[in-house]
Length: 129
Image (cartoon, rainbow, N blue to C red; front, side, top):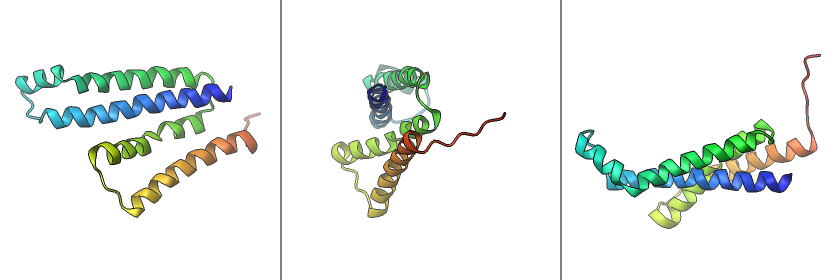
């Protein structure tokens, strides 16, 4: 079951990252003017479809995972895309990060690992009996 979660979260993470990076690229190549010509450029831009595919894929994978995964760690893990998008931005878009931003990314990863580890080892249950 653990492999199912890991693979599932990697799929959600991949689709989320695809969606965010596609939004960036679609925005870069279609300067917003909010008129019919701009809407046509957005509709014809392949990165728009990358964003749509990313969101649909993430949604389907997320709904599949929620059938089996505990909600706390699952919800936290879906926000790991903040870190993966930053990594993609660093390598492909030349983004620069401060030490504080790097520490923030490491804290996000640490928090997710703590939530996942805590679910396995020290489960606390609140019942309404």
